[in-house]
Length: 233
Image (cartoon, rainbow, N blue to C red; front, side, top):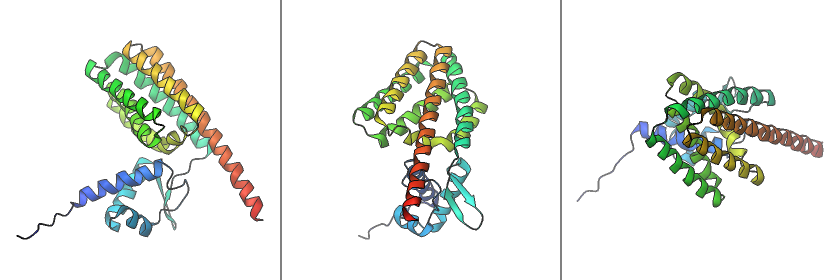
């Protein structure tokens, strides 16, 4: 009997490469500002250049990758001003999502958000950031979806893509991670109570706290870079 050989359709390879490359960028396996080496990435992701380049185009559209003339694809690197401006917009989008979701969320949606929350708490208890972050992000997206405003969702997705890697790294400090979890507890309580004002308030505070952590990390990285440069001179 002849063995059948199954090949993965090109679209599936592109989606697989996009998912894995997105994860690498978000989790900092590719440093901000680093050039994406196509040969190395093809080996790591086990794909040819065509699906890899399609994945890079997708992630450039999402804001995780920048296509630089004469240099190629580079992992996006935001300045402190970029971070402040983007988080300012994101806080407003999150607050609007919360206020509308509190009015419009269905019982089924609320049950699903609570289930995601409990899964997220389990990942936090294990201190498994790689499992925690996608659940955290899914909760924010679910609240936005429950707002039932397609214009808000489209804008939310576009702006949020720029912040994914920064939001991931903001949980690497134990004390600040604990505070973020407490804020999520308050979000669930406000949503369950259908209290739009409270939910908008806690989401705004949550995003502002994330912004402050990210800026602190950026400044720390700048100091470290200057010290390393000084040591090599």
